[in-house]
Image (cartoon, rainbow, N blue to C red; front, side):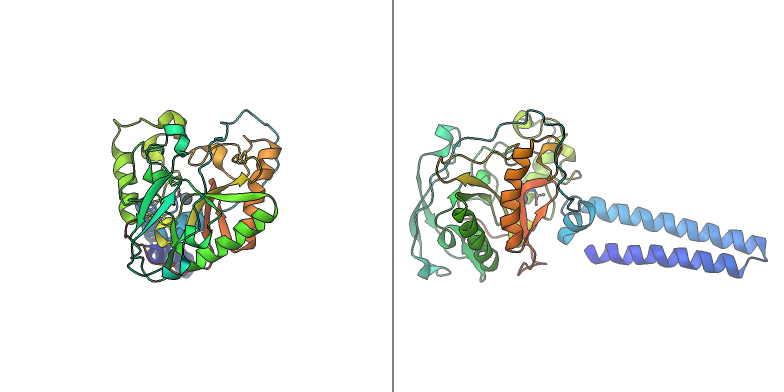
Length: 339
Ligand SMILES: C[C@@H](N)C(=O)N[C@H](C)C(=O)O
Ligand SMILES: [Zn+2]
């Protein structure tokens, strides 16, 4: 689809050039000249419709980063000049995942692991620990993030019902974060950098199966279900969330090198105030938003600087979403479960 957009754009430019050439060539014959210009205009309109259609099929971050890199380009972070009271960051912190033996990654061995993400997020905001059995049948090149970054915190929202859908999302069978090994290594360096500054990473989502994205799409078409609107998208229509770029039909997460995360103060255990919570689908979540204070913008920059230093690219519309620039599977969309 991405290539198709390139081809259509090229055709668009070529037909414009053809129109100009024809107009010059037939300038002495008024009928031919007008006829060729009209024909070229018609072709342009058709091509433009085709481009719009291609984009509609994959809005937001869709087509291999089409949205991320073309439509929603990263803007410089201007200092906010109209601070308003944003939604407060959550105070709850989920306990860290204890280190596990790393030597067995990739084997088919199953192992009990205590993790801190509770399916019933309302119960003391996920403080209880839960025993999870790791299936360990990850495709080559993927790892469990807690094995690479044991000191990070994990609050896997799509395994719980505390997310914009209000239900556990398909494909999340355990509160685990999985990523490509390359992205995981880069993220470990980010975590080390941030630990040196007194913070620790908190991961909300990493690899996301295709079936989970399909669940989001089905949900967005169900106009009867707006259970989580007030919390996560009070100012947006749910059917427009894809078009507006807040959720992608072909998500970078599904390629395994994209992560949603924030930082937690190591001393207090509190999430750093980013001026709006994870998955708040609205203007306040954009980098450079005028709706946040200078302090909140500076906090976003602590995370952003550390991520960019290790090769991750921010996403202009969501302060928590980053993709490894040199991702190892740039064209593959996976569908294995998180388990
Ligand atoms: C839904 C949100 N957490 C997210 O990841 N959005 C981006 C655009 C995506 O779906 O890839
Ligand atoms: Zn994301």
